[in-house]
Amino acid sequence: MLSYYPLLKDVHMTLAVAPGLYFAGRGVWRIGLRRAIRHPLWKSLPHLIDTLLLASGVWLAVILHLSPHHGGWFAAKLVGVVVYILLGVAAFRSHQPVRSWLFYGAALLVWLWIIGTALYKTPLSWLWRITV
Image 1 (tube, rainbow, N blue to C red):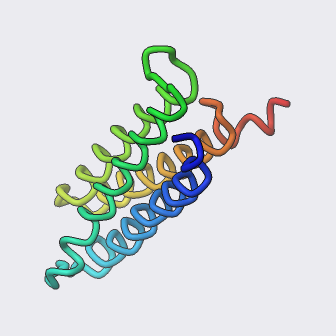
Image 2 (cartoon, rainbow, N blue to C red; image 1 turned 180 degrees about the vertical axis):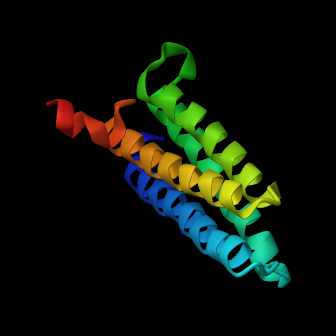
Image 3 (cartoon, rainbow, N blue to C red; image 1 turned 135 degrees about the horizontal axis):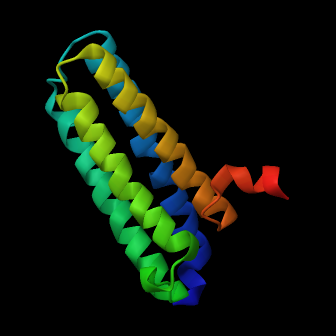
């Protein structure tokens, strides 16, 4: 099963970038232009990508014997995903533009932090370079 690791890691990393880019575009569209996304493809595509991202992440965790119970970067990444989702929901549900933009910006920062946490294998994410 370890022979699948390089391909699976590449697939997971590619799929991890897609939701953040989609969220960034969707935020500008919905908050900035105040337009709803109506096309069925644009409504269902994120669910497909998120499902594949979750499946590849679970598969990687199984292959690498990762557990959130041990703490560290993996647990921080999982908590970050939950925070990213909650901030994204808050951004799109708020009826106050300033709050929407704040939640939207915070969600994008958390998404970048999640990517850095996964790349550098530390909860410090991109900040580890400053502390070294």
